[in-house]
View 1 (spheres, rainbow, N blue to C red):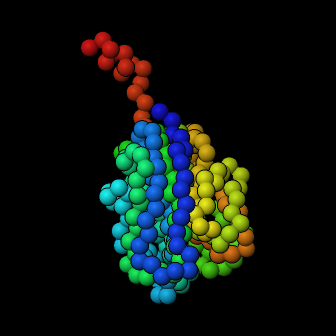
View 2: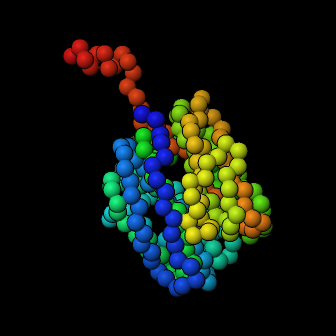
View 3: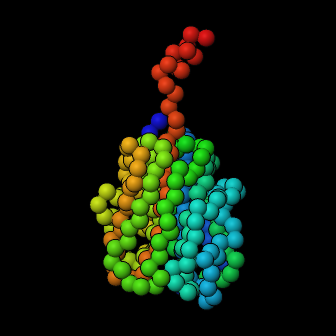
Length: 222
């Protein structure tokens, strides 16, 4: 079964003190995965202000996190086999945030074991202004997809070989390869943006394994 994009939701809180945020996202299809990109601004530094993140009461796993600059964090989380249908994503923060920016994307046809297939090196401009950010990852499984969660402050668009799935409250985006990496190997994703700081986390996800014709034949003969 091939990987396919399911749907995108964006949200967050703008210029209002908060310690949690709840938003709805609808999943469908089989062999699902939920990917969440989240960034936030606070008065004291740190790489991740997320205390917990749950979709329909099930906890997500952090893929990676990093500091964008002294008062802003960026992180990507994922959940294998999220509950199908319209459910709430609930994020609780370990401190009060003034802003949060959240993107949620779901995919189907993703292997339910061995996630992530591979990860790249986290990137941050360390507060410096940039107009393009890209990152590379080397897939292991054939026909994997690459996914990248990005922080930027506006003007986002997809670069070559990249599909932008949506923008969450101006500063959060999820992008992907929009198709398979075959044969397995290096894949670069690119986001263009206004001249401002940036950060991203990139990984690959493998497709559901397809039984060989020989194994199917033997199963039928038994």
